[in-house]
Image (cartoon, rainbow, N blue to C red; front, top):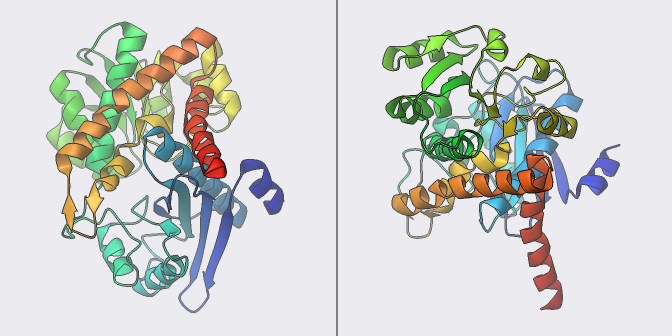
Length: 355
């Protein structure tokens, strides 16, 4: 089963990292190194099963290959999931052991922050291996990628508004923001400044309080968000929220958000096309964080903030190109994004084979 998945989806390597003494259960999935070392964050989540953890890391790793390619970066794609409750089971010993596994790959895989992993955790890992990036507070580091991810999502939303509504501004648009975590909190600054009306939700009361204390947004329950009538539905929490059960409930003209793997399966992309709901593919619109990391120079301990912001802003043009090509060919947008990402990878493969 695993080998068939590896073969059919083109994975290069899957590493199961286990150490019972420190209660470490992690999976590193390296999808592709064609464009360069495989970069992808480390996520810690309390999965219901080993199969669920494996399925998540495989989806995320493949998505990173496409994300890095489409963003024009010289990196391949990978991802890590650590199986456990980050609030109860995270330990320095386990993180250091995981970092040793990363170091053993010799730079083939580079890790960073994701759900359940914070800057303090990354500092612990960095003490063991240099193959950790995006560390907030480290000299020359790009820091927390959430701000840059939000900057990219904002420009991607503007592309969606231009395509779907023929306007260049988000002013007056009603946006249903599913999840009020770090990326959404930064995104709110741009949306509210431009005059968008926000309806939000989160499973964490602390996230809701932080958002509502600063921004004029309305709150609904995390389940009711699917029933909100809006111009743009913005999945910005965990993946798979566009599925057979939720899609029929959506009352939106467009989907554009920061979450990874928003579609539970490819059928959802075809269903969105049928329903004429404009969809900005997740890995195209949320690439700001990984673009930001690309502007770190670890050897000189410098970071080019302006270069990162300028590059991230180009997400607007990337998303618009995807939407236009999809419309012209009546093809789901996620399929067009995949094609554009693979075009660059195939080109690199051909040049390598002929050199």
